[in-house]
Length: 127
Image 1 (cartoon, rainbow, N blue to C red):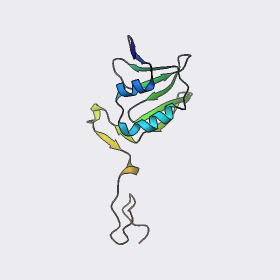
Image 2: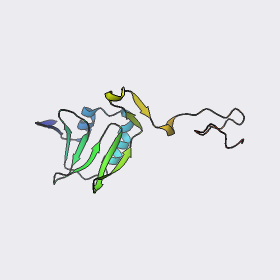
Image 3: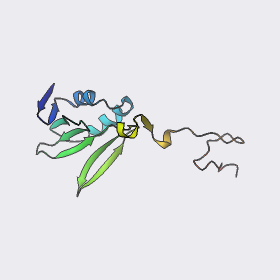
Image 4: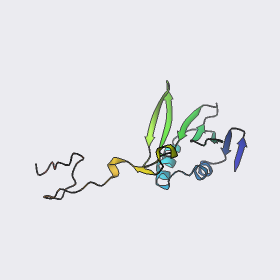
């Protein structure tokens, strides 16, 4: 169930907010696992811009911002712990699309020993 209070849309469950925000499916497992470790009382998405899902503590402070490509968790002093998600959907200003992390990209094999080449392209086994 969604409750709208002028500038925010509040959700009864995190799953309701997750469906409304449309985070890439590949990110759901890590998002749910991270959110399960947090203590929050309310869940909302800013109504007009919808840039994130906010998890709010009983006192009103935000304990996490769930974005489509990462989760930002305030740790104090204006600093955040950033949890990178497997798939990062870029915004429309950058041309859209989906970005995979470099560690997930498959590199070509060495033509001599067939091990995966590092980013430098020089085989550490043969050279």
